[in-house]
Image 1 (spheres, rainbow, N blue to C red):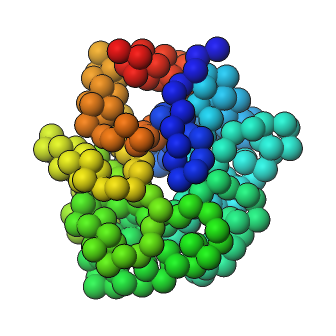
Image 2: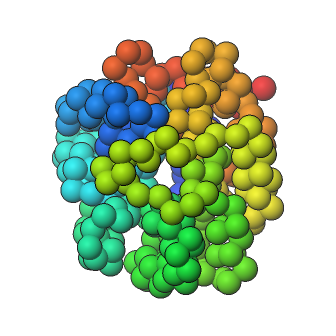
Length: 274
């Protein structure tokens, strides 16, 4: 069995590689065809198989949206005896975010954070301080809580204003240069995404400055930086060379064409052993 190194993450033992949730919900940040491929493949049995495969390869945690589909997946995994840990993201399409958080907590995640696109849209519309109230509500649960963002300045703002976050979800690429609608509402949403080479340098520099642990995500530029095994290895190498030793990376894994969970775990173990 592959053993991905663990770190102390807000008092939790988390593998330095965790499984991302976007493929499980059909969000590719690439195009509509890839979204559909994700949706058709990730039936409930295939989601459960992925979580088991992650555990078998030393990936002890996954991150996904706290919508009813993903809550059901985590529940079925646990009912089947699975031991994977869940870091839950709020599902901001719910009319009542606070009710969504209360429902998420019923499923016993190990940590919870607020959805990055909603955080960033609040920034663009001058309502960013509303997010501080959401953080406080999550904090009252007693779980480690955080926010996600694609915008380095948002994370700096939260720190400067002492929101009380325990961790940050930090996108390597800024996909929120302006207000962004969901793909279901704006069919051109993905076309607005930008992946300039300098973005990861900016976000990882901020991650190193923060005393709090961070989770780096979109390290593969939403599948653009993993066309070959060498590309995938280079993306992981850049991430681990540029984040703090206690930070972790969050990578979406699509098992339809090859066993990405096993491949990614092997690469991470090899890189971190060097």
